[in-house]
Image (cartoon, rainbow, N blue to C red; front, side, top):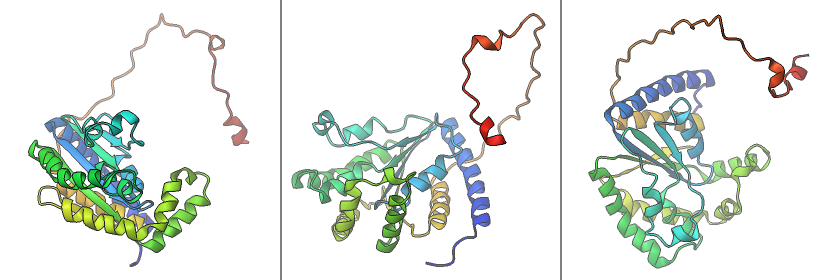
Length: 265
């Protein structure tokens, strides 16, 4: 790993890129574009952190994060892609998939949550499914966050010791540590079948989080053919005064206790 970006320089560049993201999201809204961004990679590879920085200043009415739980019994009986289709963006929306239909090629296959027939059926259908999305005008961008064995272990250890992030760990995550090679083989096969000219994979080296976030956001902005709209400058109007209105007495309402007062002294 090379020298890290200094924190102050990283934060300044991140803020500049986030301002560009707001311009891009306005272009999406104004033009009715549909954007799907897929984030995949090993556990603790930095997907969530990148998504958080991308969405930090974006309107939730335009940009949605899709992070689906385990499928229900009914969903397991559907066409595999069906549960994901319902989360695709409408006109003027971005959908960021924090893991996606590629679960079948990764965790489901490695952990035995799907049959071999379902797995190979997915590998055959996925390129056709994505070709349909792109053919219908959806902008599809797929990222694979690549983290080394040593860095993943370091991040896992830090999560285990941090009560604020311990929720990110699950028994499946721990099991995945023992199946590193199996996941590597599964990723290689997945790339062989789904790294297509219509929807290529873009690998983000993520051992250094600052570098990976800057690189990912910069690349995403380059993949979206947005332009900046000249929006009219808003002027805050003066508040209209009403000499007749009287605010009801405060004791008629129930207020949240002022716990913060105990911190001021």
